[in-house]
Amino acid sequence: MGNFKMLIDRYGRSIEYLRISLIDKCDLRCSYCIPKGFKEFERPANWLSFDEIVRVVAAFARMGTSRFRLTGGEPLLRKDLPELVARLSALEGVEDLSMSTNGTQLEKYAQPLRDAGLHRLNVSLDSLRRECVQEISGSDSLPKVMAGLEAARQAGFNKIKINMVPLPGVNMPDIEDMVAFCIQNQFVLRLIEVMPMGVTGQKQDYVDLQNTIEQLKDKFNLQESSRVFGGGPARYWETPNSDFTLGFITPRSQHFCETCNRVRLAVDGTLYLCLGQDHQLNLKPYLSDNCTDEELDNAILKAIDLKPERHEFNASPEKIIRLMSMTGG
Ligand code: SAM
Image 1 (cartoon, rainbow, N blue to C red):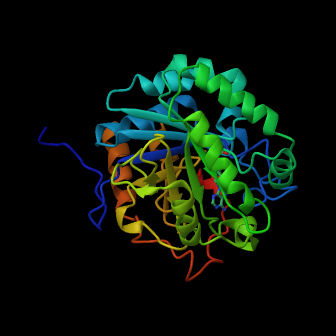
Image 2: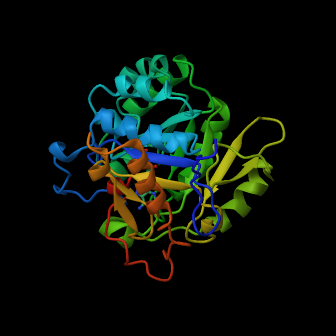
Image 3: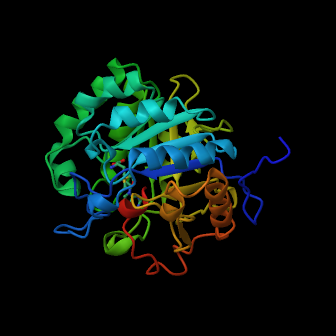
């Protein structure tokens, strides 16, 4: 145990969470994420292979990281995903393996993913109105997402999290319906402020969710929760009787950088240390057969040391030209 390495950054934050982008492509074009007509996706030849991803996850796990989330782009577009999930969930130290998806293909994959050992699911859904979903995502995807959610429930996923990005003049009036829907279905709802990432995120006005908290608190009798769900930055509110949980992710109106416990692996092997900064280290060169596990571990430690103190989404909203889908949201 004398050699045990821990991933603690220079600000004393322990890195407990790795998000892994499996692909930067998506079948949707949400207005705040990938621009319409965008074509500059990473070439498949440059994607990390399953072997390389397993190697990175094993390295993080042996240095104390226990939570891992598969994301993208849209992770369900990556071929043979259940095979990767089975390999990752079997690794020592992987205590929590989850996935973020837009849900359009969940009807087909929920059961195989559950069987392969996926623990938890987050599904992105910005409205319950079909035309509104179409307006935001550029696709008539609501029926497929609903079928996906039902399949996920039947496959045994519980406490599914629904991620909603409120947009002024678009889906703000839908928030209360979404709360009611999540209460009814025992989903956890999380409202996320738009981050100024890439041209799409930067041209989008964001909603200060502090006002929304006040409104929903009174209407649904919510009380601030001290419980931690999923180890993330969301602050949670709960109803006393209905077992409903509502999370707020507020990088604009109230940042949470001092408790940031995560880093992100892009599909080409670049490790990004902060969503809102450019600090990065490419792990790909350390994943060749010529590199020992010790060299890989040391590269990861070096990267963690680069993690910046905080993002500057408010002070410099034009700074990050990377799309959320490139970093792995
Ligand atoms: N395709 C998967 C999904 O839909 O969950 C995973 C990747 S997606 C980039 C992850 C999350 O990032 C989604 O909930 C999406 O709404 C959110 N997102 C994308 N761009 C964003 C932005 N500029 N600001 C805030 N959230 C964003």
